[in-house]
Structures are given as structure tokens and as C-alpha cells.
Length: 327
Image 1 (cartoon, rainbow, N blue to C red):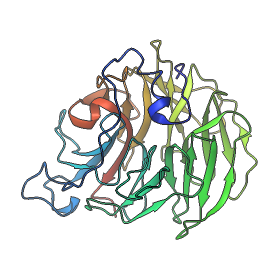
Image 2: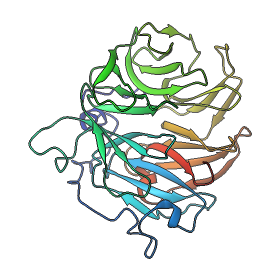
Image 3: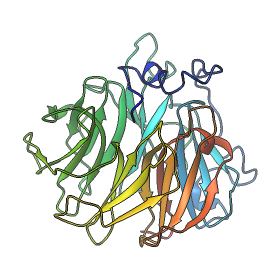
């Protein structure tokens, strides 16, 4: 984004929201049934009459909403509020636990101790069962490796923090060669990719390494969310906001120029592919006045299939898919 962030996301988004006079502090976190919007189906995603679901974080309303897939502009079927505060990036592990990067930490979790965290929700749960706090400062993204290693991008200090499987104590805490860590992704070799604002560069780190390689990718704007498809192509949300022209760029392995650009969004943040890589979901924050949406594109065609505009989607920042059909 050309609109510059500062340390706290509430402040960080202030420049984005400068033209949006109605913006205020997020509401205090409260306990709600995560499936309160789906009467008769409380308890777990598996009990819902939908095969797949989509998670969307809304930094403006401080919640994560749950949507059915394969439905035109669906309404949310549930929400997560307890344990979320200014939620940004989202991730799922192999057990379908949902990881939420909270740019501010809910006081209900840590009374009288202001910090930031990544909270973890079991599938179907309405409150988190664990959190990552140490060396987590205003996190904007989180990703989980196949072995359970957790990586957090902390925009507050620009660092990446790595947590070994089962540990809440960082095993690595490092800063990319230039810029501030903003989003993360892992390839099939478990190499970590870090997209950095300010420098507008993407770096690759081998497992366990703190020495990153600049991929030298040709971008129009700032690199935001990233994802890999099954062919090993790297997808990057390339934001030109506040100007028009933002795209999701597709880079073939080893290439510094995109082989394809998928347009139609204004200020794309995080992105996600479904199982099988048939659909691409793009969280478009819009101008920051609840005028955003989640765009669902066919992949790799780039054809717009539908837009999610109800609930959290209007302030979309993070997005993650949880196909119930995937083991």
C-alpha cells in the first residue's frame, strides 16, 4: 500500500482510513456462540449443512466471520469474537485449527497486560485454547508448517518469529534484509517467503535460516498476502492503492515477472486458494469504510465468480479456507 502503516494497526490503518471519519476503536471482545448465526447448528463446522467454509477477518469490527462456500454472496453462518482483537492474518494447520493474528490482544485473555498475540481456535470452538505472545508485536500474518512450526510476521518491529512445534518460546526471531515483514507463505520445500512493505520486496528463507534471498520480483505496488498453488507458482496480492490497478500476480518458479495478473480488486490484503486450486479468495479492504469484499475468482482463469460483501467481508483483511472434505 502506498498509504503508510505505523506500529499499531489501529494507528497503522489510520492513514488508510483518514478519509473515513467514522472509524473508532474496536469493540471490546465479548463471548458469543461461534455459530449463533446458524441456529440449530452450534458446536462444530462439521455439524453445519455446508461442505466447506471460509474464514474472514475484519479489523474494523474486531471479529472473524465464517461463511459457507459455493454460495453467491452468502451471509455469515457464525462469528468468532472472544479471543480476537483487530484480527489480521489467518491460517489453518493440518488439524484445521484456526490461527488468528491479533494486532491488539483481547483483555479478556490477558487482564491488565497489553500486548499482541496469535490466538488458536479448535475447529468449531468459540474461544481460543492457546496463544502465542513472546516476541509477537502487532502481528499482521501467521502461517503454520506441515510439521506444526508456527511463523508470525510482526509489523510492530518488522521481525519474523518462529515457534517450534508445541512450543510457545521462540526458536528464531529475525528481521528480513530490508523492509518490514508483512505477510508469510511456505512452499513445498518448507522454505519461508516473507513479503516486506517499505522495501516492496519478497525474501526466501531456507528452513532454520535467518539469511534471506531477495527474489527480485517485479511488482507494481506493495506485496501483501501470498499463497502457493500445487504447481509451485507463487501468488502475491500486489496493491497499488490508493491508485487503481491492483492485481494478484502469479509467478512461475524462478521467474521474476508474473506470468498472469488477476485484476478487479482495489486494496487486496490476504489471499487463499481452496483445496484443488479451483478457487482463489482475495480479501479486499476497499477504502477502509466497510466498502470492501472478498472476491472469489476461478483459478487459474481469473474469472470473477462471486463477491462476499455481508458481515466481516465488508472490512476484509485476512482470509482462510477450511474444506471439510479435506482430511
